[in-house]
Image 1 (cartoon, rainbow over the protein chains, first blue to last red):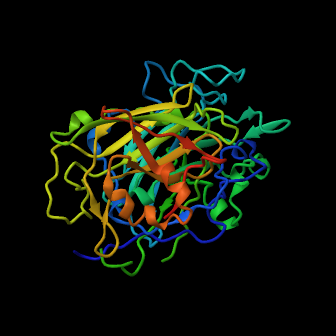
Image 2: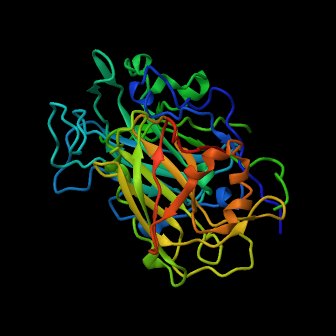
Image 3: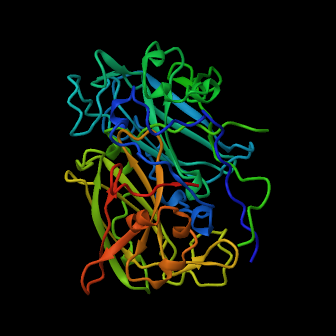
Length: 235
Length: 189
């Protein structure tokens, strides 16, 4: 049988620790014992692959999922999914979810005293094209308070979930907006100690994808774990 | 060109809004062969409290031990529309239920054979980065020689990955404990 090629391990500081006490919910939910080091076998380097068959016509346009238009600042969000070797990740599923423009999620547990928007759900999905590109149309989400500490507010963000080619490339993250004054104060954003890795969660304003008279463009590239250069061992 | 992989962030408390459209709680119906089984259990935090806002993802081979993925080059058949992926959010009591078919054995490192298992990816509010673990089955003799279970130095922790068959039925019980005496083994892979 041919040799399997596994996926690289992240460099120190570029991924969060499980225990990050400033984020209080991590204290009782982080593993108490060290993780057990295991090789990536056939079970790890494979993973579910989803295609365009899942995607409905308005799944990547969160402003077109209801009869009317949602309230808020329209945004065009686009970018590429790459692996850490710089290669595009084609035909991979992206799921996104977000608060509406008032900072309220369409979720039973969100009790924030801000209005829901009958024309906004806040869920979308798409599949990257052959060059790893994706594009969403949405509304800029509002900031909202949470109870982690006194006067805690989450910066504006959109949740992203990606699969990539393997269960090892699975990623759930959050995309932030440039210049948000809440970023330096947010314990979730700041759980990543490496500044370059942390800042790579912030999108950039992009005049090129901004549509005149219609919506502001933001660009954000997402990088998934890449293959190791050399086979790990014969399987 | 070396890029830095994008950092992980928590799914947060509103994960259902984004992740339940792809819920796959019963994939047994997609399989044409294999023993139909149900795995159920609960997820507990470090204080023994149920975790009602977790999400489990499952990845497994079909009954012949073949993954529906191009990197699986084994000369074994795929099973029609059986993808082998499951996704289940926990309920208000931290409970979950996943119906599938028991996977076949798959090759491991060297010339070893891995006992039947399911790879599990764990997400929850409070978890900044997902965790990987595995489900094995209490009625599989191959567990004793499994190359991955064997890497868990503290042998007393290995049973945390073994789903217990309930009586004669094809139902298994498997809980996740984030901390404490019964803490589930999680993998660095």
